[in-house]
Image (cartoon, rainbow, N blue to C red; front, side, top):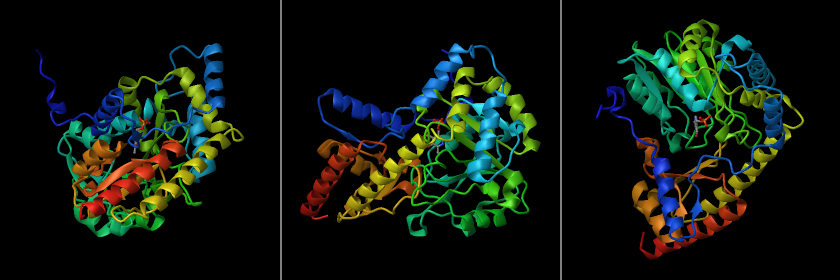
Amino acid sequence: MVPKADRLKDIEFSKIRLLNQKVEELQAEGREMCTFTIGQPDFPTPQYIKDACTKALNDGFTGYGSYTGSLNFRQAVVDKYKRENGLEFSPDQVIASNGAAQAAYLVLTTFINAGDEIILPNPMYNIYDNIGKICGANIKHYSLKEENEFQIDIEELRSLVTDKTKMIVICSPNNPIGGILTKETLEGVADVVKDKNLLICSDEIYERLTFDGETAPSPALIPSLRNKTIIINGFSKAFSMTGWRIGYVIAPLCYMEPLTLHSGFQISGIATYNAEAAAAALNDDAKYHTVDAMRAEFEKRRNYFVSEINKTAHFSCLKPKGAFYIFMNIKKTGMTSNEFVDWLVENYGVAVVNGAVFGSEGEGFVRISYASSMEQIKKGCELLHEADKALTEMGR
Ligand SMILES: Cc1ncc(COP(=O)(O)O)c(C=O)c1O
């Protein structure tokens, strides 16, 4: 048998998917489960987007398209960023990808050589760690701590950046913590990198999902970061289109030549009918309200879940300002995150994700995805209260 390439030697399967497999096994045994593990909205894709896809298929959008995505798609992305994010780009700065995950792969593998330093958030959804390993990068992490409201500690970041640093990844709102980086934090990052020749890779996949009237500013809004920032975004979360696999990269013009060259081999363009549907998703202002309705429903669920968690003796959480995750502090249980996840699943049928799978700063936390029905959330909260009571009875 031919061994796998060396570049894959430290790569692991997603621990979240492994946990989901375990939940499915328990369900197959007849156990009733409350599952809060998956980062997938529980809404169907809005009908107007599905209609646009059907129309595109019927209109003959079935042949090869441009490697970077159709002009219609790229223009829709540009218009969206101008309208909603206050940023002006040209369609030549956009490349369509099969999901944000592939956008991340394109960006890192286009710029990172073996031995280059990259600095990633801890905790963080771990595609960047794995892609960084595939590139042979020297990976460092900055911490996002609850006591610091999950903002970047600018002095810690300053201590990590060297002349070998090629990229800093930021993600706001963040998976797993749901935190938003403030403009002041981004200005701090700008100060750290002001004399450095490096890239900021900004994962903005949750930027439409923010609450309490807040927005998640892009680092590209900070003038000195504008030409250093490569944006990664996609349709999975805001439009509930996880299975469609549509995302994109927006980069300063000076970086488009290598990205475009490389995308020709890595992506070769996305499905042409999907590109039409995605453009319709962004363009149809009135129908876009279906997306706002999903966001409002997430906000309602968040409010309920957070208030129930903070009524317990052993669990607590900050009120996350974005995405659809709660990062619940379980330190008072005296268990590790791994022990807690197993205990909760076995004894109460509630599945949550071990915070430590997102990095060492996630130890003592679990990630709860509230992309789940209100009925499930109410049941899950009842069970959490029972677990809390049992912990008190156990003398914890
Ligand atoms: C922060 C972050 N980036 C990227 C992705 C990948 O998204 P996509 O479905 O568009 O590949 C996810 C998915 O959970 C995510 O949480």
